[in-house]
Length: 336
Image (cartoon, rainbow, N blue to C red; front, side, top):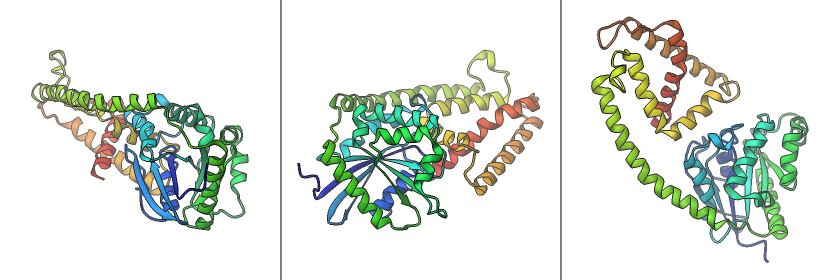
């Protein structure tokens, strides 16, 4: 088998916070993918590099540290089908890990669960790890990071045959690093061959996508009737008719939330990641959102659309605040 072909096909995988789309842009040397990594579907980029036609596919990411159970079915099916976007075959998976975030046992478990579910047990024979980093920090090396994170990261690298390298956002030596990556992929193919997808798994994912589309339309019609009932009667049942404007609003929110699985996943990423915010500007926006929520709740406390006392106490405010913040963020995501 001629491993140094004129084509090189790879799928970028990783959590939502791995910055895999940014790594894809570094490899291709152009803005092929949205670096925010907010899409729920696969994206494909192509460019001629070092005389070879390089095709990269980014698959939807999972929540860092969260198990397969928390990943929406839409994301799972898209990830499984990502290998079909690399004809005539896939040379390698590139697992992107953010070297500026801790990699503990929860991260390892989430990574193993997702990759093996998407691509089978043999995925590790075809995977290279690419660490993403904003820039070289002093004399710290990627080996220092691997040592610091300990067994969870080290055992994952061993499963991948200790094939890894680092790509920097600031462009430092990236041409050299990209060439090194291609050499590692060629060596991997020489040793293990191309990745062969499980046709049964691919067919199941395609069937789920087809059936999911029709079921989604049916569910949307059902919820539309439920929402009409809410609009006219202010409750999901006659027994709840006097529950007040806040409960009616929360009921509508829950229905909207349940059928917008993608928006929910993005909101979880924002509110449940370590420290709630990666930077001071993020924390500032979060505080401003909380302030806006509290002002809204206070107006509901003093007046009611039905002309009655809403009965909101401080405990209700604390309990409702996070749900309203999620909706506020969902609207922000949809606008972008």
